[in-house]
Length: 175
View 1 (cartoon, rainbow, N blue to C red):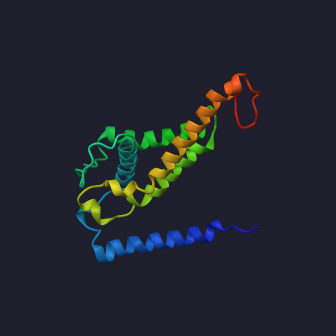
View 2: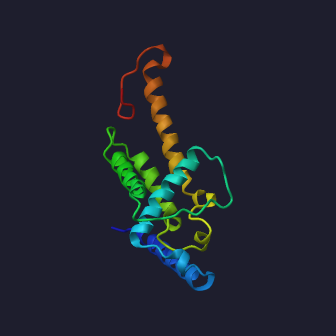
View 3: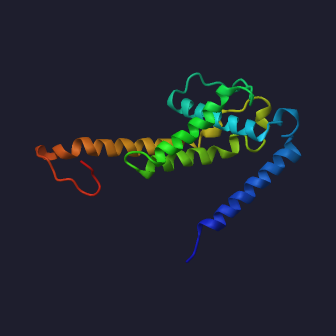
């Protein structure tokens, strides 16, 4: 049995580690602006995910450099973001319909944003923790999940009334 996924994944991880090394060594992504604890980085990641989802839903105002957030592990309200991300993942995984499309779209979104969520230092974090261009690729996961959901919804609503009479349900259309 072959696993074609693993060589590509290993190359991707190696490329990511090399990029993180270049960011630290040659670009200067280290020092006081990047001193976040592991908890602080998780708080930043949760907040960034919801920031990017919000900008995807309502992209106004678009700003070249957003204000840099204060990440404070002592502030209890900041824990709402990572808890909400975990809750969203749980809801998508164990939802009523148990469709995998929405979960796959969200995991693609979060996975594509992973290098920009604060777990690795990138130089733009000196000015802001978020930038619109960080989510250009990642937004495809959410868009695909929404488009798939609209297709399923349209099929469920319109299918029983095609050609003026109800059609029997099939394996691809739940009625």
